[in-house]
Image 1 (cartoon, rainbow, N blue to C red):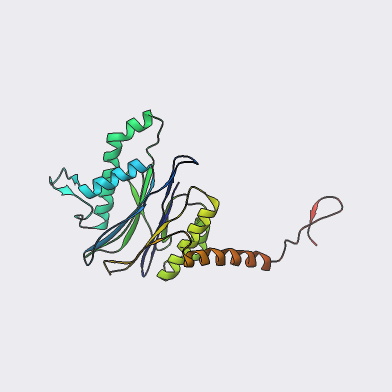
Image 2: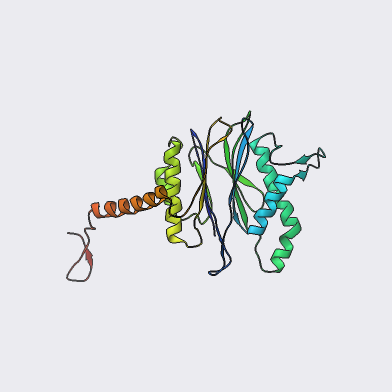
Amino acid sequence: MTYCVGISVREGLVMIADTRTNAGIDNIATFRKLHVFEEPGERVLAVCTSGNLSVSQAVLDHIQEGLENSDTGAVDTLMSMPSMFKAAQLIGRAIRQVYATDGRSLEEHNSRFDVAFLFGGQIKGGKMRLFMIYSAGNFIEVTADTPYLQIGEHKYGKPILDRAVNYETEMPDALKVGLISMDSTMRSNLGVGMPIDILTVRRDALKSEISHRIEPGEPYFHDLRERWSAALRAAHIAIPRPPYIIGKTGVLDTP
């Protein structure tokens, strides 16, 4: 299982991914799921992966080594694409290429062709964008109304993002809320785990600002987890108890 989140706010982009993969309770491993492709001053691109590890690795190989463009005869790579939209299309082409090669074989062996990507960043001359790319190669993009996208085990972290993030959220706060959503996911699903990779990119900077791996026991993340748990306990204690009582007839009543 996986949890990755991308948050696009006015100031820039935040990407967060766990690193746990497993094929059963006794076969757990760590693999990087947040991949950064950067040429400072020219482009900074980030790809988060979820789903079948062999499929996502094959797609990453294709977009780095290149796919032949049938219209121009050129070999297209992620670093040669002229725009974020064209780069997202390239990832979609790579997914379809891997499916054409391996999809039927996977299905014959009862293994789903299951993969999804978050793709965000900025290329010089264009605007910062964030996409979610599906296993069919099609994609959607964030908007100012919904400034985040998730892949993998998204349901535990989504309520936090819904309540605490909007397009005007400052980047340090977007990172903090994203990490809280990661903590909530890890507490509820053992298939999501540390280390955690994070990336922040300022709009128009064309280079990464923070590129960091949070290891188990890191003081800030440990403190964040403890403070969030304490805040939740204090909040529910501060809310009045429900006023409903059971009457003599056994029927729910209000005083």
